[in-house]
Length: 372
Picture 1 (cartoon, rainbow, N blue to C red):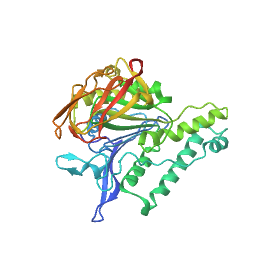
Picture 2 (picture 1 turned 135 degrees about the vertical axis):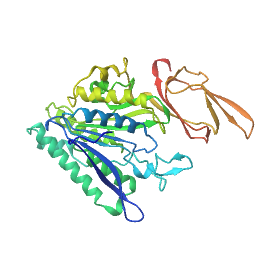
Picture 3 (picture 1 turned 120 degrees about the horizontal axis):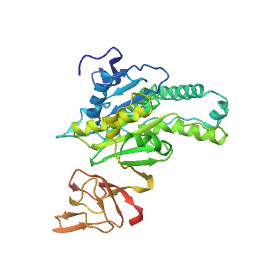
Picture 4 (picture 1 turned 60 degrees about the horizontal axis):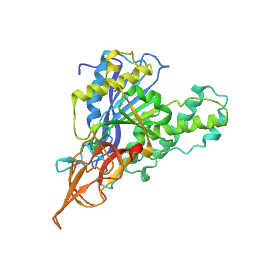
């Protein structure tokens, strides 16, 4: 990329220390918007370090912001997990889990302890900007206090809390991930269904209000909880933060042509949020048909038997109930066994390895309830 414009700054953010006591850092790009009242955006990639496609998307986004200053501030942190990034076992990343203790890098974002009903009562007559600032201040104070608890923090918690503080001021949070061998799909909170459509994914999994440790949930949970508390008190308010996980295909792969489509879809969404100007090319990159699925439709499938697995379906394929979609070999008894399931569905992702023990993760699928 050419020399950065004056409204784009690059800095280093400390997320830990190595065994020499030196700072472990990540690169942070801050793009100053033209309008302080416009929505602010936070984007990160590769918290699961083997999931690298989001960085190709970020390259395109940075090129765009070099040519066009956004209306709102944009913060971007590529390769946000330097520990997993540099942790290789053989030729592959140990990128989903901390190799030292097994922590999933994307499961330790902070869930604030807030009495939302009491908060809503206190701010029942407050202006939107006033209660939003108050909630952000409360979350920031709790996350900062947790970060200062040095003796109680694993690497994953410290990394997650640090990123959470970076995302806290944003109105839009986009966490860029991938799956094993996978199609593109999107996790969206149910309240954001209409705005999620502008991201242009063919498949959108709608999730409930919960906070189980991922960034998207930590991003929307406080705001959705507050909105529900206001509703119970008779005040109708929108949820002020949109927070999504974008699954951008298969891990360990960079696909530049695909990244252009994906970045245009993000730009289309940002245009609908008045962060940037609209462009016909962004809209054209979006899927023409979008399928929305509830959480109950999403099924992780695990191996009923250990063996050497071969699949007759790939990510994006559909299958029927009782259809033979693969087979496995068990060499201890020289057996060859067929694989079928008592439901129909869409294959979201396929495990990338073939030699698997009983209980290993095999597939992610969307179950077709009408045919199951």
